Image 1 (tube, rainbow, N blue to C red):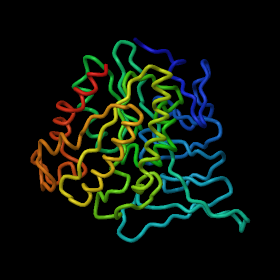
Image 2 (image 1 turned 180 degrees about the vertical axis):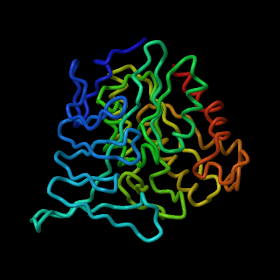
Image 3 (image 1 turned 60 degrees about the vertical axis):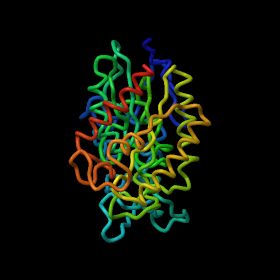
Image 4 (image 1 turned 90 degrees about the vertical axis):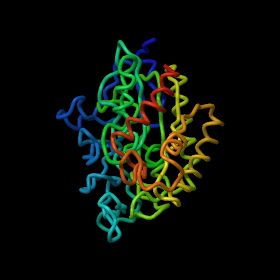
Length: 331
């Protein structure tokens, strides 16, 4: 059964929706479709990894940082720091008060990316996949596998690490559930995942368990922040009739210590979902069963496959054999 926009409106902390007033009032740009907007109480900022190139800073009158990633409260100046050898996205912004103000320094936050670009289908079911860059890799293959039954879209609408770490999810979930113009998205199934950006060392740098707003978080805050996200998605599901599915994080197949961290996070996630009554689909177990136990130097003829990324062949296999069947059961 198709749901109305009114049903899809979720009572969220900072973004309220009323029928007939769904569009956010601040116009950032008409260059994308849908147009990029932000709600009152926030600020339009350029966002390097947003597909529309825009996003929303959660502070009013904010200072948008020139790095295209972060922002600072009004009356502060963006000051970035990044250790030598770290990637360009591995920066932390300190917000310094302007002109010797008595205000204290605060840590900048990442600009929130938007939700799916297309309106919900009126003839098919609607599936929203929320997750990191691995989910960005497999979502097109899930969409193909389910194309006769559902329109499958990814949130956030952009690249890089997608939904990033759980702290970014807590901050930006409300935006992921709406279009770039602010229209609430009505989904029949929401599959979501966090984990790879929450402590495991994914690349040569940065190291494990660093906090980089909008990129990386520490393991000790993962479970409570995931519980926050899950509770809000359950509120959405109660309001709209949507069904939820959590994807247990895929492995770091070529890196033993990183995968040990992934497995620990997966145990914590499973406990959160059991408490919340949310079903899960185990991507880690599926990949290990196919490729062999960690460590594996390659799989699907791809070096470092699922450590964290893989080739199209790996993503297609995971989508067709594990993810699409799990979603189909909920449609």
